[in-house]
Length: 550
Ligand code: HEM
Image 1: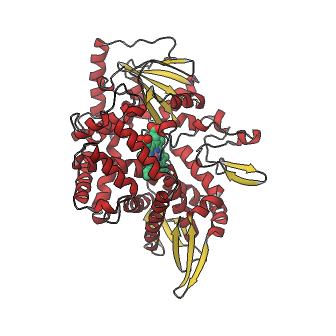
Image 2: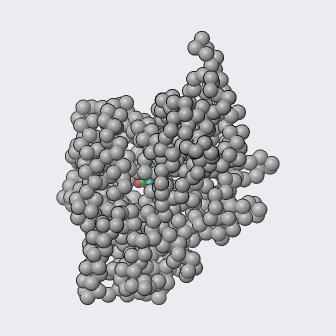
Image 3: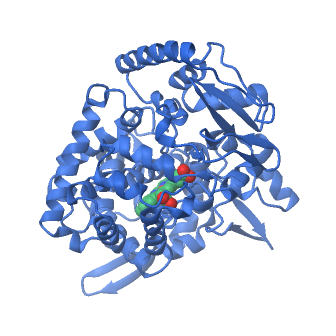
């Protein structure tokens, strides 16, 4: 079998170059040119006709890498539009990346998890992202059981997988997380003054960072104790692609490395003081499991910074987009309120009236809001699921994939495919995921995470489940998707029920565009922040207290 460590240049990692500033891009480009020159003289890439068709770059060896550096997620889209292939091979330096952009082939990749494996890639990415050495306790523990790279054979990773799905799946743990989270959101809402002006994205980012880390890491979580960690964490988050590329990260990703180390130190102190004993069941179990597999206390706590990246990097931007689409359309806002208002009940007590929102009821009774949530994920979560080819394999009885390569499911291309979503695939259609069942609108069950386009609805059939890529799929379907849906729908329902949001000019807020040149490892960010004014919703100025629960 091919050893992933032998492949210094992970093809997928080159795509990560897009999220960097110009000076760093120049340094990285020079490195790419030097490497390309050496590779050109030392190696030759061959292509078997049974492999997916080859798309040669205009500039040999590095053309595709440059394409992704400058055009980010749009590059795959352009290649897909131009060639119309469902699968193709991109030569990159001495190796190749296979790109898959059809739902049936994506499903075939997912089904082949024994030979197309997530683990070798995520191990490599984790090591680079967190700056662990190859002799670190983390590396030793992660690789234990790697007897040939079969997905399910990595002992520690398998245990973590089972633990994560058990504690984040539907049940009392998830309910507890949702309740803690909603209570925290409520505290942040109560702090908003009438007419307060906000940088909307920054506010969502800060309040969700504090609420999420409180929920998962407990009341004495480091971010609550030292709010300077919020900026340190987001400095790290912005530089994750550079850390993964790993070309002199202490220079090219200086700010990110500094932020990472600052948060890691705070996580370690938190652990040493025993505060983790008040963390959620998921996090307590993670720490116990990592230590049990021989990680040092320092590395186990540093690894939690990577966990926080996975949680916040997606949840914050998704929640922002959902709010931004709704508040920038008075018609949609009115329709969403027509769904949410009946879900708000009131309780009378000696202290007066309390408005109560149950997120479970929101999820059951607000199909349009649910559909909007999936639609913003379709448009702004162009996730690329990457898998390592462990041994030569034939995909879907059609394409040869050769060992030692990376195969990527291009989520952005699938999410924009008019053959899947209909002629309006490029635009936001709030009703895209609604189904008319016997005269009542419903959303597809959340467990399937799929959806139906206008075109497919007419035919009464569903979109292929593997076409919706926001939460990945197969063995690595995001275990946090239930929690993410609860927090997004709960947060947004509570906001629209209680507050009006307008632009600083007093008009309807204008929604920013996403940054499409970012590498799709997390949900896309807005290209600019947007100034807004928050007001108590007319009719609720006097409206008493609010309580939220799952
Ligand atoms: C809108 C929010 C979110 C999105 C779009 C999202 C997306 C994803 C995707 C695409 C993957 C799979 C990557 C792949 O196929 O290669 C993934 C994995 C994962 N996600 Fe999420 N995620 C979100 C929220 C969360 C939250 C809130 C949590 C935790 C509370 C979480 C925990 C995880 C974990 C632990 C994995 C790794 C699974 C494994 O190793 O088997 N995610 N997520």
